[in-house]
Length: 392
Image 1 (cartoon, rainbow, N blue to C red):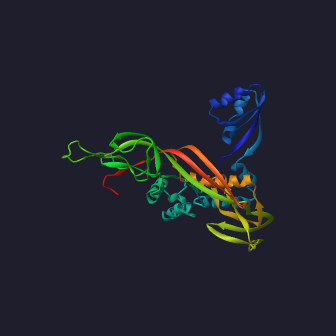
Image 2: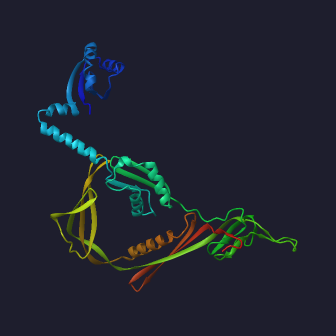
Image 3: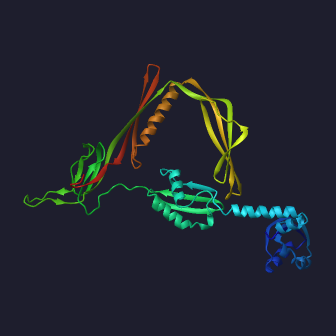
């Protein structure tokens, strides 16, 4: 804004030249030595007007390599009034446009959908075209966290014309009976007990026992030796580790139909300006007549730097024609695909804290038509869950 010059300093005392400028508080930057007796640097216009005595004192020669900044641009074009007026109007327009929100970016969400967060932001008055100076980031972050229970933390930041929303989702803790309430410990699934250490209550199973889902493993009902006294109720505590098994299967046909691109591509162009979309006429296709296709959307946003996003973008919908082609899988390919599919199903249901100790895979081929992979995974895991005595 204030302008600066790039200068070449030559002489045998250029280090002294730098030191004197520093003592006189003349700001220099991007200092680069080009040889033992020469260097280039940048300095303000005001500072340049003050270095003549320094150059004379250090017997240095100073030469301007380039002049940069608005003052020099105005001086260069001051006779071209229309150009200057146009440039000023452009700066004013950019400044006005930069006063509004034109892009909303959300990161960190997995289970909470983007549309849900956008809807809540809209209710709070945060949407494309909102004047950013009226926004209180801390207030919006707190309100958003209160409105969406699944969020544990929300970060709300405005950079340029962009809103950056960073969220951290809440991890729901397992339901645990409070320690002051008497309870039993039951099995959450069928298993074989590997180890059991009872800390409070009475153990009803031992190592090697087979237990069923819902079976009481440790009871909080302690019978009194005196039969006339009522039993004592406690909150059962125990570390219970058991062997569990998870099974899944997947069948893959040896002949599959898969899409193969033909090379034909159709494009549909749209322009989004100030939050509204307009189809671009006379360019690209008006209608896609492919029966099978892949669609990819490309966005080309007009922006200055990373954060000054302008309310204009080009959207290109690319449609790639596919032809469905029959392909015969090899036995190994089919086995791998069936294995991966079955394993994925298991990984979705096995608890994160479970330790996999064994994996057994069996393949079965059906009349040269398909292959089935059956996977059994053995785990070690804590199967104990608390249940209030007398509760459901």
